[in-house]
Length: 352
Image 1 (cartoon, rainbow, N blue to C red):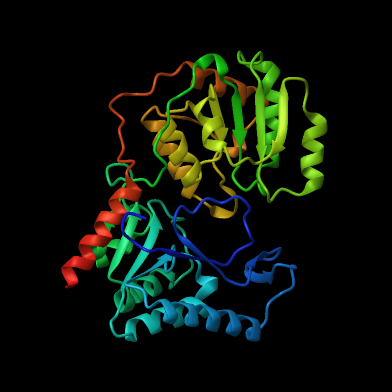
Image 2: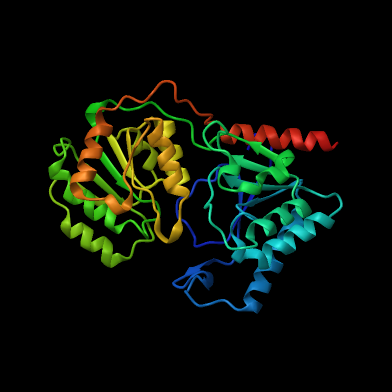
């Protein structure tokens, strides 16, 4: 890990085949969101967790951190998100703040956030950053998106902000176009059913109908929906569960059709794959629409709002994307991982 000994604490559902490089994995008792939304926390058996369960997990995490005595403590998204995890995050921040020696406390956050938030949330975030954090690492290129566009109060902690560039794996060699296919994905898959249905219907309407079309279904899609899509697929269309070689498939795709999540877009940009983006926009979510709109404005992707998604509209967008030549003037900093290491090392050295 470029000189750092990294421990990654993960507390969601187990993810098979996940690559974490040379990091050590600290597996917390699994916890995830239940059917009733972000404040409905359930264990691996979908049983709601109580205060005792939370206290036990908090103590497990506190003990693990104390045992390691880290030089750097990084929280992902919090305090901009993950607020339902306050029960363990606030205690570890308090513990780190009072530790001797005190670790560097860092927030790691994406470049575009959901812009609408409940009253008082922005003030709470600002207060937590003021009280605990030394740095806020924004994983994006400031020439593309600045944090204050979706978090207006970012100026109040501007001295702590560092833009790292986009975090993405290094691009490989793009396979010959003759091996290409149309690749349709939707992240975890929980909200991608309609996109997959429309993609199946769009294939005969597209000029790329003679190519193979591959639908990668995420692990969160219910089996009944997966089976229904499998039954709808015609010859030349593969419907399968998400694969660990996604980036390899993306590198060889004639066109990628996806939502506009950070990781998928980072992979699209690093592989230079022509793209159609259908951003997730339910319940006031505007992170993905903002990202997709920015890419559409610079000619890097086709964008379709979910309300406009039809087989013909999608087929037309795929056809346009397939013949679009990405602008050589649109270049973003894609060295987010390397830059993050350099920023953290410099911050540690400046404390000595």
